[in-house]
Structures are given as C-alpha cells and as structure tokens.
Length: 352
Image 1: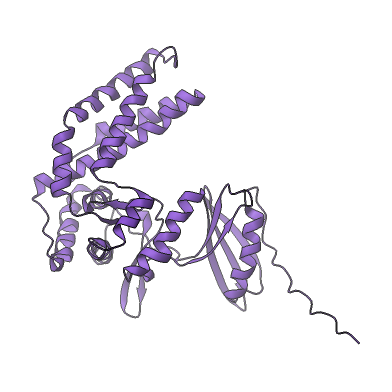
Image 2 (image 1 turned 90 degrees about the vertical axis):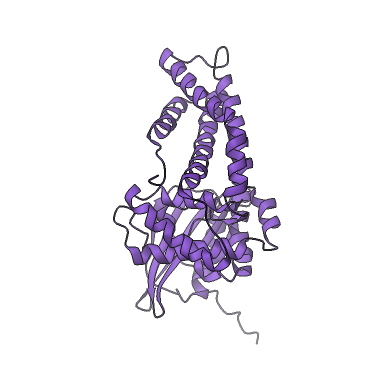
C-alpha cells in the first residue's frame, strides 16, 4: 500500500492588489511568513504610500508586521547592495531594516522587497529631542567615517554614482539645456509660464557662472568621498529604546551614493529650525573628531551646504521639463513653479 503524500500547508489569504508583480510577491511571502512563525491569524494590508505597504499578521497571540516595497529593478539592486553587502562590510548591518526576501515580476518590470517592520520612531524636526537627535547624528558620523577610504567606495560609486561636484555640475547643465528647449515650436507656454521659465534660467545661469568656485569648495571642503545615505530627511531616521539604550536606524536607502559628507549634512540640517542647527552640527563635529576629521568654519560650510541644495533643486527641474517636452504634461509648469518657490525660500543653513 502506497502512503498518500502529505498535504500541502494551507496558503495564507494575502489580500490582492492591482500592483504589478503582486502574484510573485505573494508566493515569496508564503515562505517569509512561515520562516517568521506567522502561521495563522488574520492578515491586514495597509497602504503607507505609493508602492509601499505594511502587512500585519496575527499568529499565536503575537502580531507580525512586514513592510513591502516595490522598486524599479536597478533601484532594488542598489538597496540590496546597501543592506546585504555594504552596511555589513562596515559593521552596521543592525542599523537598517533587515531585507527578508525579494520577488521579481516575471517580465522583469519591477522587484518587490520584504523588510522587517521597524515601526515608528522618526525624529520630530519641529521639537528635536537632544538625546534622540544625538544618537542619529552619531550613527550618521559612524557611517561616514567608517566608509571613507574603505575598499567598497569604488563599488558604491560604480553602482550608485556621485553626489558631490559631478552631481551639481551635471544637474545644472541638464536643467539649463531642458529649460532652453521649453520654447516654441516644441512647447507653447503661456506668458506666465514663459516668465517662470525665464526666471529659472536666470538663476541657473548665475549658478553656472559661479560653478568653478563652488566645485572647488566642494572638492576641498565638502569632506572625503564616503558612502552617503543620500536622503536624510527625519522621516528616514528611527530611534528605539533597547536594553543598551537608545538605538538609531536609517531606512529608505533609495538615494544612497558616494560623495562628500556635506551632502548628507545639508539635507539633515535643513530639516530642523535654524536655531537648532548649530548644536546639531556641533554634535556631528564631536562625533567625527576621534577619526581626525575637522569641519571647516561656518561661513564655508554655508556655501557647500547651499551648493548641495542647489544641486537638488536643479535635479528637480529636470523631470517636469522632460515631461513637458515628451508628454506635454500639464503638471510640468506647476512643478517648476514649486521649485522656484524653493529657490525663493532658501536661506543659509547656519547662522553666520
């Protein structure tokens, strides 16, 4: 008598979506849930933002939670390298969420990542707590000093590019070239839209005239090339209590790249009210001092921080301009007007 094969374990009732690659993701999630002891109970799916979901599973009286994020394939590869190769090489694998699994859409159009859910705990920029900010600043400094000069930097640069002087120069040149093409016959702007285009070009021409000075300062004062998080908004910083005290972690490594520390510092400092920035910068100064790093004086830091912001603004001009040229996208000029408001509102990062 032949024994019947054991029956397959019941599949979880994972809610469906219209997202591409969801079927492939659900197949992978079966193993993730089993590996993490989430073998039963209700399943809830919460959409956090575009392409990002939280999956909650109740099992044995305990809740299991995972974050699901959809990427373009090249961006998925960048995040995978950060979390599975570069941070472990620096001894910082515990300072980011664990990547539990990946799932590629069968035609190669996208890749899903499954992360452990680290929950809430982002810094509050409006009311910064010195202790919580301090542990985040210490982690940023540790990332920068450990990676500077490390053998992984050329590999990071190869896969992710550079956010220093080359980023500023390339974005400036591309933004100017595209804005100059936003004119008849390719595009027929209204008088108001034409005036907006002209004002943005005037700003960019001035930056182009100042390019040699700003590039020189970035290369000499921005700090050594190192691994950057690339998007240090406070929403990407999490702080949690542990038996050893507060621990900081960084999430969303989509913009990770190589470049000078001034790029990360400017992003982080500009998130806080201006009166709070000097003591936050001083905390970073103290954290990098044991590595022999000494930051330049405030007035020079203001210039390199401002240049990093201008590089980001120029980058944000490129994509609505492309949409206008290729698709006549109605929202393109609205986005350009928003960038102009950023230019108007930009202030020195630090009291000078």
